[in-house]
Length: 219
Image 1: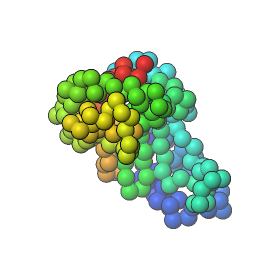
Image 2 (image 1 turned 45 degrees about the horizontal axis):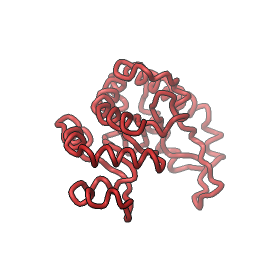
Image 3 (image 1 turned 90 degrees about the vertical axis):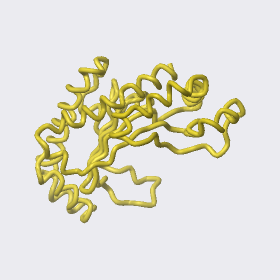
Image 4 (image 1 turned 135 degrees about the horizontal axis):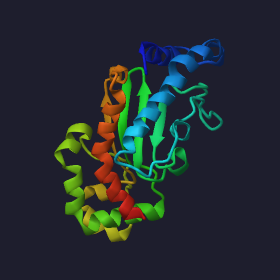
């Protein structure tokens, strides 16, 4: 589904991130990037539904636009140098739900997921679940297959914690996290594999137990 020009286009765009170049290469973008990426996300979603049967999202629900919103940014380049998709039951419409993430650029492939967009109350609930049963949480993030694929849990941290978590954080420092996500950074040449949808879904399947844990915690 994805061929060499998919990665080459993303590289060329990174070197020519302006509207004139993009307009001249728009048909190439649609043929080499947009359509093949939609097909690939669709194939990945089909495989995810084997272990996430509630995922009703379509590829268009999940895929981020390549156009950047530059209104409040010092960086005025008009396009992203990557393509990305958030894979949840309804795609970008419920990114606050623990799910999966796919990101491809010329130099990097990222496959991951977790609880990333946590508002105040869901974050409190996630922390409370960890505090009340840290062993269950630790079992999930130290599981062999999870560690081999993703390493460790990532996320920005609060410098100051709510009082109810301060003591527990001394023995479980991940309570300071504002996000609980996992991410593998891989060779982007993997996207050219004929079995890439299976390859990606296998990574996501390894993160499902942790997603289930956070879904239960924040309901």
